Amino acid sequence: MGAHSNRNRSRRAQLLQPKQDLLTTDLQLADLKLKLNDPRGWPLTTVLDLDPIPAESQETCPLEECVATATAAHPEILEARAEVEKAEAAVRLAEAANLTYGLLERNAR
Image (cartoon, rainbow, N blue to C red; front, side, top):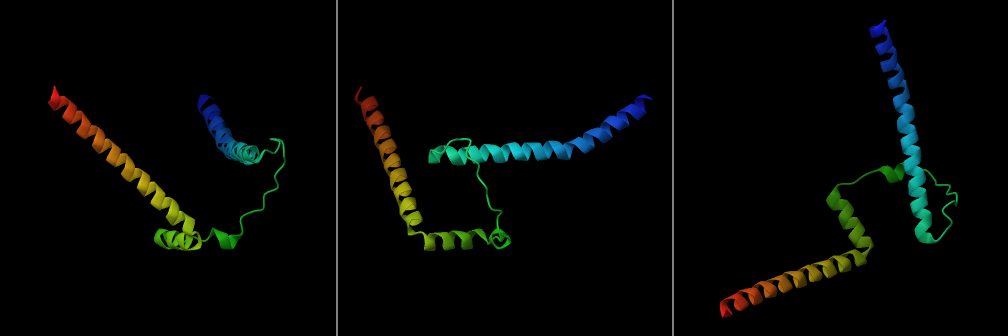
């Protein structure tokens, strides 16, 4: 009787797993809808009726091609990338200056 009971539990768990997955997905979707409402200043209870993703937009392209297409269509991406590189260079310069200052200070003692 114990083995039969364990098999029944296992079958029941297998049947319940897809339901659990669906509930989890529904909760994630509800959470994402709340996150869409909040920055827009809409009431969190605003019901969003989202259109499904059209099949043609689900096609993918190679990474390099997608990046090239995106940067060609949005030059601000390249401008933002240049700003990030400029900021990173400033950080490296500041770190080098700090290191140099530390070494000079240590040698002065």
